[in-house]
Amino acid sequence: MTDFDPSPDQAQALEEKDSPWEASSVANLVRWKASKVYFARLKVNGKLIRKSLQTKLFSEIGRATCRE
Image (cartoon, rainbow, N blue to C red):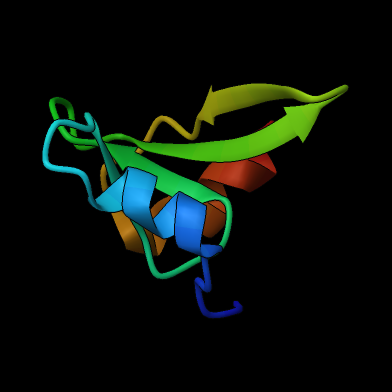
């Protein structure tokens, strides 16, 4: 896995205290603060898409992505 290196705009957006999302150590992976569930974050045709990985454990992310 690669280290998360967000652009300055992304870092600022993810670090805002009002944001319901937490940044992770992996690129394109965020966690919803309220439920602690991890989401994949990607853009399709310029639109931001977040897909639930249906896990709260970072160690299970590889298994969660293999299920689909």
